[in-house]
Length: 215
Image (cartoon, rainbow, N blue to C red):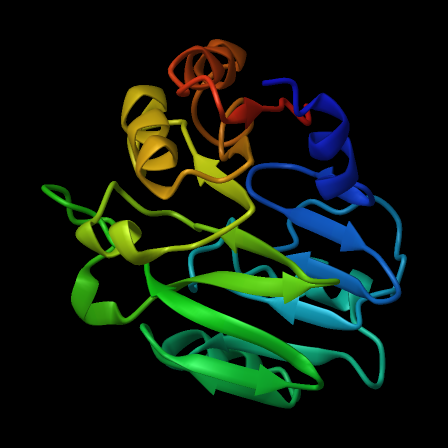
C-alpha cells in the first residue's frame, strides 16, 4: 500500500520546531507547545499547551506567537500560570471532549509509567484536534499508556527521546496501537534524545503506517 501522497496531504502546512513544538497552518494557524521560536510571527489562532514544564510551557515563546484574539488552551495547572501572565485561557481536563472557537478536540491523559516526571494525578493532557476533517494527535510528554487504545487519529505526533517520555521502541508500539495513517516522532535531538531515536521509531512502525521525519 503506497500512501506517500496521502501522507503529504495530511502533513500539508505542518512543521516540527524545536523539541515538541508543532505548528499547523491551514485557514487558521495552530501551535502546540511553542518553544525556542525564531522571530516573532504572532500568527497563532490557537495555542495548545500540554503541561507546565519549561520546554513545553514557555511564556517567552508564547509571547512570540500569540495575538490579541488567540485562543489559548491548557490543562488546569498550566492555565493558572498562563493567567498569571495576563492571558485568557480555556482550562481543560483529561479524557473530555471540547469545542472552543469553532475547533473540536479531545483531551488524552498524558503521564509516565514507572517514572515520576509526569504524574497522572497532575492531569496533564495530550490533544486530538480536528483540523479540516483530519484528526491530529499531539501526545506531549507521555509514556505508552492504556488510554491510547481508544485514540482515533489520522496523524500522531509521538515523543521518542526517552528519559522523560517513551523511547523510540515504546513510541512505535504506541503508534501501532493507535494505527494512524501517518506517525511523526517529536521530542528528540533537542532537549533529550538523538537523531537516531527518530529513525529507530520509523523502523518500528507497522507497514500500513507512514513514518515521516520532520527534522
